[in-house]
Image (cartoon, rainbow, N blue to C red; front, side, top):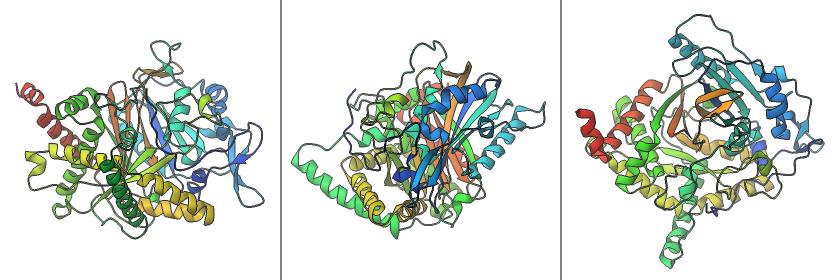
Length: 491
């Protein structure tokens, strides 16, 4: 697989010693500042009822040894600089097993689980112990026989690092002696890659015209990004309240699932990428929701922040490799934001030609691919951190998030079924919480499916109506791109 040559923009991690204190990375400081505290929730859905008798053993022998941060707390040294300090982990303090009435319906436990996730999404981590915890929901829902929830503070690492850590605890269900495998990260035109980052990082074209276009696009994108992060705020709509403190409000988390084979069919018929298809579906779905909930806002200027992994990698590495000082896929927070304007709906376009949204997404992605604005943004953050400190930089990042309407991020999961302590994992998804936005969308591929999770501000966005809008967008695009599927369904 070909390495992707994009400059790492956010940070370089310091050496992490097993026995001593070590520095908190710049991004780790941003995420634990006075203006931001962001966490990641990862849900593993079990095929069988959960036996939690081995939980402490798993934590002690498998999870905690993965990284020194999992057994460290954040403190300030004599100069006021944040450090990770090793402490003794009291395992039971990190294990939560909620209790609900026995013998109820699966739908009842669906509601219990959703309310429980909403509750823990709003909670802050105690600073007196390491910044992670697990929650074992031992009741059957309509989707699983039980749920294992990992909640980890984002200062511990980005999605790539944290997912690598979780995967270190999992094994192939069919044969634990074999390694998990992942979809290819190669970026030729015929691949089935569905990682949003990899399309962006194909590199600059070699001819003069494209280089000039790259310079122009870079200047325009960086200038617009700078304005969006400071003075240019999205309008208030049915997907964006724009209120101060929105990150402290309750959220709903809903999920939906799409077949990667269906996405690939659309990709092949339209001669676009999987990324183009996914973005087209999401953008159309958001516009359909805005159109249904408040028609005159359907084409309001709205911006999505796409999170990019900035590592120079060809795929997941083992945790041991990530912890090596000179490894290119180093542990930590190494990502960037990319501003993308949501395409607008032309008159009757969503029903007569929904494929236009895929092609619009393709145009945006191709233009962003030929821009180095993300690198300049990284340099700007480095400069702010160096001369103004982490608090000022954190306020800039907070403003970047708050001024936009939504955030989109994705991760690639394994092709094979996984198991945790002999519990087969039916499906999994993740959500970023504590973000100063009303709408967050995450995606995770696993066993030929794409699981989409949507975090929405309670009282502003109708989660079921939003879910229907995304599913409706996918159906319209699929039927338009694959006519044979439409004819089969009508027979």
